Image (cartoon, rainbow, N blue to C red; front, side):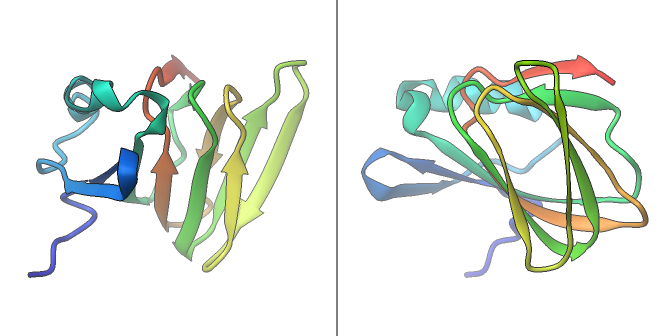
Length: 130
């Protein structure tokens, strides 16, 4: 039976496991996800799909590993702030991807609209306002 990735993210765990997660309800959902999957440590990956019509209002970073961002539709402008303070800008369109290095702060601008697939090492994710 098909499941909507936009509603029900997937957790990829050790040993090649894949588990459907509860329905995504918003930012508070991530805390419960971290609790559910804490035993997988840095080996766990969260697979999500989100649609955007506005720029992100915050920055985030993932110290446990690299995040893959795949643009499905529209256009995304990723901004990465490296440890030495330099900034990188990466523009991706449909079928293209970018990698946010481990521990690098990143945010995104959405010129019009976009839908993206994310493969994220969720353990220890940090956020800050933009």
